[in-house]
Amino acid sequence: QGRYQGGSVAETSMVWIPAFAEIGLGALAFGPFLLHRWSVGRWRKTPLAYPQPDKKTEPCPVTVLLPVWNEALVIETKLANLASQEGVTFTLLAIDSASTDDTVLRIKRWLEKHPNAFANHELIEMEHRLGKSKAVQIALESLESNGFDGLVCMTDADASMPPNALKRLHGWFANPTVGAVGASARRSGGLGQEQVHRSMFELLREGESAYDSTPFLEGSLMMWRSNSFNASQMNIGSNADDAQIATQVRLNGLRSIHDPMVHFADVAPTTPEGQRRQKVRRAQGLQRLLLRHRKHWRSPRIGNFSKILRREAHFHLAAPLLLVGAATASVLRWGTVLLWGMPIGTLAVLHGSLAMCELLALTSWALHRNGMHIPGLATVGSIFTGMEHLLAAMWTSFRGRSLHMWDQHTDTRVLASKQKK
Image 1: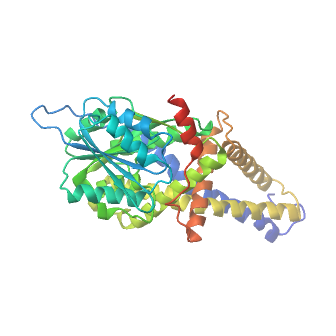
Image 2 (image 1 turned 90 degrees about the horizontal axis):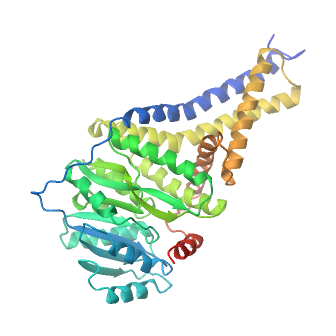
Image 3 (image 1 turned 180 degrees about the horizontal axis):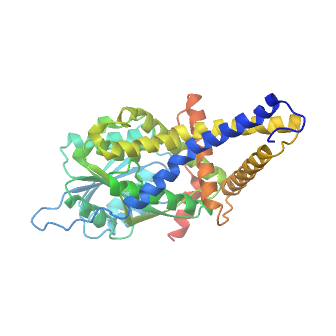
């Protein structure tokens, strides 16, 4: 029972061994996801309370950092959106990464027409494009050289905010333990699966923030204390500048949190290839960040945050490789079946059960990566597509290719400019 009809023990083992290897590696890959999801559910029950303002304390000065590159289609709308912010007076610091369109000219003209839109403004023009992380570093170095001591808000040119966004973010810093705060994304124009991915992402960020801190915030709209992050701590050869800041703020002793009550709106890439390119680029930046901070995965100095870093390292680094191992075991099992025939008895049940699980995984992945949203399969598809992006990012890094400088998603800018008209 449980052997091939007429088959040898060796032949039977060629199915048992890869079958159990596939189960074991799959459990190691995805078990921590279930554990983290359960943990997040518990952590979210006691969220960090929004602080009451201290009327005796002077509000912190704010500088809005606006990195731009070839943003002519949306830059004037962005400046108008910033000027409409209520309850917070701030200085605008725009830094242009050697745009080849008329972004800089449009900024200068807009500021000439609206001289009182901001408390003050400055435009830094880079001679060469060196990537967003380098641009952010140069802007922060400028603030540090001028002795700025306050709050820095970074936002993207294609992200629009409600009028109370900066005020809401600013209010968090009445809590002296908070060093950085990020907003939620409301993305339009993308494929159906983007919302599934976004909801899952923000759920995890909320739980991590309640427990201690999240290492990942959205650079499209985030704010931090200027003294909680030093420009020299930016890795300019990597992207994910927002996650770099969020993680380093926590390592420097303050909390980095996600606020689900404040949001920004932007446009996601409209094609599967566009979304894939964006996510692979992001995945590489996060993988590099986690590897750079591997000494903190079990550091008692940072308390609960070490557990969060350790789990995120598993999700972004270990789980994709374990999934490859499970897939390899599956191929070996199927190869044996195709060579020697179907097993019988218990082995047949095991083989059939694994085959059904594999069919579900492959179907969910294929539908999700092609923008098809089917209830019940969306979450599974989002996870497997995420593994694909992480593996692609690993392969890109293995080949020695860095994605910290990328071609702009022009479709998102075109759609954003049309929506504002």
